[in-house]
Image (cartoon, rainbow, N blue to C red; front, side, top):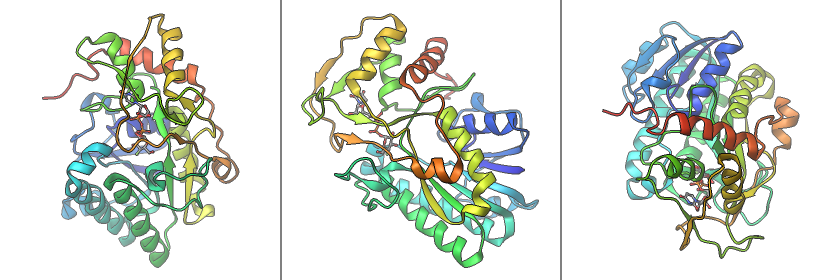
Length: 326
Ligand code: UFG
């Protein structure tokens, strides 16, 4: 298929481009490098520009695509709270331009990169796709708004669309790893603290109602996420309009991650425990039955050892990340 990947220079987007190329798809990337990395770019045609520029976006679709996979978005929960309009403008308004171009015939199918943040803090685990969506921060609300917009446009116009709701993306694939600025995520912060003395790592609270008192999350390897996107573009015509969780169905605590990282890196890691980070629910775990039954997707690299081994390989070889910020 001829596939446009927005955000193809980002963390999950670049891994998906790599997997699409390995499967023989014909890929083009749209990115403005606001958070993506030029060093993460595959050698494919690049449309450099912003989704906010509607004439640029429609020009990208002059030659229609078979599928669009839409990753491009801001994704820092904390920043979305302090600067919500930045998130609504970039994520929602940018997606509207993209969806409009697809609705106008620019592509046959649409796969959207959504998030578990649309669920907020449900009491009942695991989280199924019918769990009420009550996002608790602007980031989650922008992704849910896009899901609604995409769903309504897809129904009205009749193009197939699917929203993939990721849980905690982690790991690395050959040559491509996690490098956000600022970095807020657990695994990259922990591993970078071992290679960069300027990065400190602390556990945010060990008084949660979980077996070891630290928060539990469902970590999913970006290689498995990439496979899910490919399966989604291949299956979306039959699936129709829907939302699918991407997680393992299993959760690991912050303490378990620290112990696994210590074993794999051979370093002693004894982080300070600080107070809770605002807005962290104790446990978020996906039910992934729908992904298994509808996409035939089974995570193969998302055991904790593989995630930490691959992430450590990347961080230890790239202690400054991509080191390509101007
Ligand atoms: N944590 C620490 N120390 C750190 C960083 C994180 O203890 O330095 C803890 C957090 O408190 C949390 C856990 O590690 O308990 C995971 O935190 P992350 O920031 O890695 O991930 P989140 O679960 O907070 O966020 C993820 C995605 C978001 C998405 C959210 C949906 O990164 O994009 O899941 O629930 F919105």
